[in-house]
Image (cartoon, rainbow, N blue to C red; front, side, top):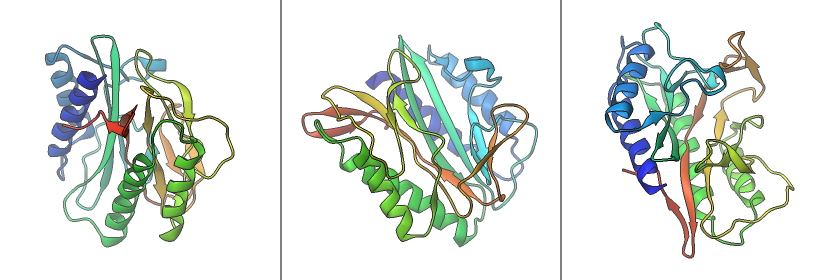
Length: 235
């Protein structure tokens, strides 16, 4: 898990360097695919449930699962890139939202707060902690900045299987369950400036905000240790 997490982090960092006005998300997908294959791994999204590409690229109002295409990125866009690699039998899953060129303050603030939500959630993780504390931590911080928290998409157990239990909710909830030593799972909050209601496109993957407002997301795969949580998807 440490090896797959580290590779995913390196691929994501590389993908972020490609984000520039005029670059097509297809180009990012092709470069990411090549790096993963060259590293002896496989891009987990490719073919997963029929997903046609090796990475998810979600631009502006796209909440998640955007399919790379021929649209050039524009100055002022924000883009979430979601990378999962399958290396030696284990999946490493991570994402981040990047700025394309000069981005307006409204978008910058959303991205920074979303990252802070993830950081705060990871900081409370440890053996025996209730999973619902993750959702409360994220929701509380989002509320302070008057951002919405998307409810329909969740964090998840990850390891030999891409998506497994436990289900990690990013909003306030009363679900049962506590973290266990050596458990690995993702936390991946999605925040919006406006509506939290998602609309799915006809491709059955691309999910956008109902009102076209901006959305941002960050994700790490973490390991529960005796000392708390170790972030596996770090370079």
